[in-house]
Length: 320
Image (tube, rainbow, N blue to C red; front, top):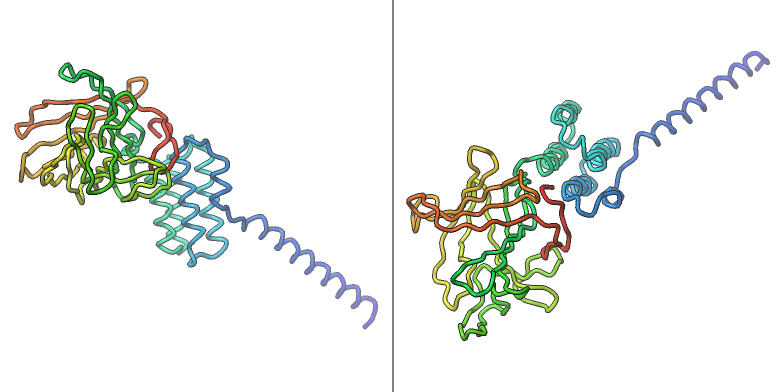
């Protein structure tokens, strides 16, 4: 090989090496998969919306159908939404990103994760989310009764879960703090028994049916808006709760107010309206009971607080 050919070959090899090195460096910059734990670490502890987005990252991390670049693209997008709260619900930007995923042939399960994460953060239904506390000063009752509605919303599935308690002077009076099948006697001599809707919560993120001494019993009310209802027993503690009542929930035309109760008039015809009053500071929540003739006869007003939920041991900002 003469000197000219040798120099040409050497220059060609050097050029190829530089090109490959450049590609490797570019790949290392573009293929950066975000782990949901790193996102969680950057969030305000009260940021429920951010936790939903971090959960979307976790679900994406667990998918086996994605290429690395696809996983990186989705996790970076969700991480950006989690960190930049002011741009989370930019509808045009979010729709454009989802359209690109569809156009580029991403697996449907991955697209659904992104869609659900955005709904869970941006739906108006999320305004019901919160730890709501109210005091009922009834003249016929010698002491004020505190009512708690620890409300959890999954806007993607439209499932509403309310963990409720009644307290007097910080002591839980409903549901009775007894194990299934057991009863107790109150200070006034009244016998009250295990509540049929009771679940045991100890901050583990699970509903237990046996107490372990680390948590409390709560009355669980749960329904899917415009979908599956549940068998309901009133929050009041009793010795005999009777057969209960099948309850369903719908969302009214304003897109926020819930109507929950015997909606087909197959039994009592009673129902509750659960209404948000967002202009109040702090925000308030009105639960009003109506009879079969659509006449209100009872209501309680609750205020939003940042208390820790007994369900998952996490707190939330009001209206987050």
